[in-house]
Length: 295
Image (cartoon, rainbow, N blue to C red; front, side, top):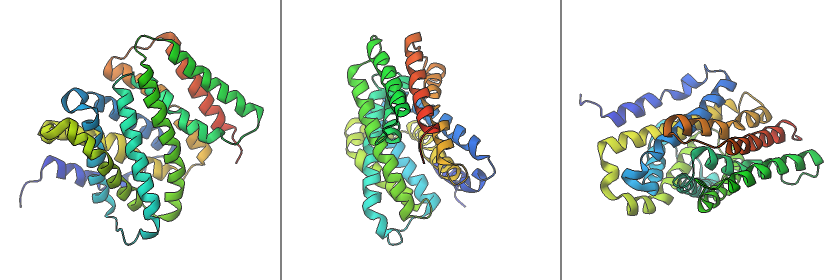
């Protein structure tokens, strides 16, 4: 029998992920997913100098699609009634990641995630007329104003790209609900991952060329795909079947703070006290909006 390549061994290992996830408490699943995403983003940022931003996005999404397809073995025929949603979901996923990584090239990880988090926060607050929800919106806005006024390592273009990623994240949340109502397992997600990989591939190939085929780059890219896509998506999908969405949202509110810590520990990105205060404002606004949201 031929010896397995590193990629095939990793794919085989991930194939057992759905069975292992069930043994982990749902709250822990969400927390592990949050840490996994931010560690993956920190690792991906280190690829920028080798294959460029678009190359890193392409490598992450394409390899994630390969693993998810191997994991779920999706059928287009079985998901034909969900094809429009799958296509929209995949396009939004690709654009969201491209905008986020372009922001990450210009601003620290913690700041990029904090600004991007305004997308899901807007979904939680939209249409509300309660004064308490207005308070959360003002608190989040104050956090972003603080970030914009700190200057130095904060690029206006980076902030705008993070806002664009946040808008895509809002669309991603709404499309996730539609996808979940039209599919019963992870096959729809796997097909959407293929679409997202195809969306960013022209940009990635134009920037990175054949550099993405270097064995070391492929292994790092696979690690990013697992940490940023496969593992957190699987954990979150399982956790949402066991805990109320409100609890899930409160836990996810920790993501900007975890991103700031990951940027500090893994990338050496020092944040100023005012920037930490700004991140705390957005985290508190998101947690409050989710915790006290109406059903």
